Length: 427
Image (cartoon, rainbow, N blue to C red; front, top):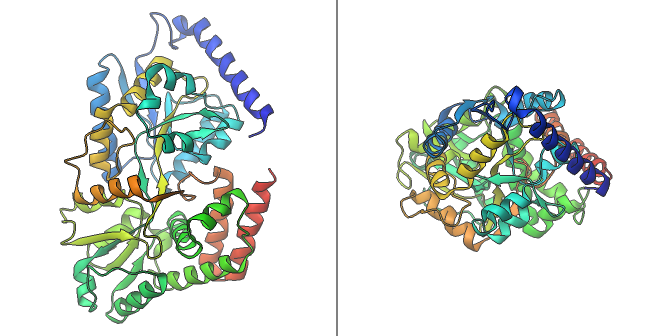
């Protein structure tokens, strides 16, 4: 981010704090006896296992902060895309919630440059949060030397979920591993021959999710990361080959994908209508709440070609400029950062705690594999979930992927991805 943008963001944040302290006692801001006790938390966790995770976090928040009232500002749909549209409108009209969910990393860039969220580095120092989160995570939270959000978890994106009964019906070993996409494609062909959906997928964002794991599998961790810093050429032949593999995989997917969201695509695997699904490990909670047993009813493994790599994202919470209740926002961030909050939240959501002091011995068997991978594997950042690129860049990538879903044209897809990279590299 250019220095002028950072100066603008800091200036707006300072003005906002001055305004709050000047008038909070009269209008229900963050100071004085007139302070509102409501804390509106804006998320996209509106249903299913995601809402269960939020509910668990709210229970801890309420017990830790009896003087504050949680207000659920959740907006459902599109892995946050619908919520982000609503949030953008509210921020532009100076109507921010007390805090809002955002993926940690580059997704915050647009909010920072618009002067819409406050830096939290001083709060990290004051509260000792720098000691609660691993150094590698803190580095990924930073934008130009400043931290702008508090992570509630760590998710892994490059995971395949599979129904063991469907695999057995297709003559496949449910415990088999696939070293490459080619090996996995051979297994998909067997499922197709057995009359089941080989690979379930849903609307555009889940296709971007699938694409990023294919790029990671074919390019490797270093070249994949180079897509986001400019050191890997989007127009290169290696990217073309990866896009051709993506085209092949999409040929094994369900035809009703555009009418589904991730929960529906995952449910196809849970119900035995599909064999495989590529999804982040929030899917673990969906399997668990469906009373399915890990390693018996379903299995999970890294996307073929990505073993030894952890495709990272984290849900996090911000301090909006002009928050209607700064003390309430800070209280929510305290709960999010706490070991107690992270233990409750992540058990329900399928992710793992970002807080190193959280107890994880009683977490489920899938989560134990994620804990081990996070500690030992190479870490890369997810683009579909905001860690690798800005919201605006992701929007352009999603547009290119959506067009491909209609025309199946690899050349046009690559041209769209190249144009998106050139646009945002120069911005």
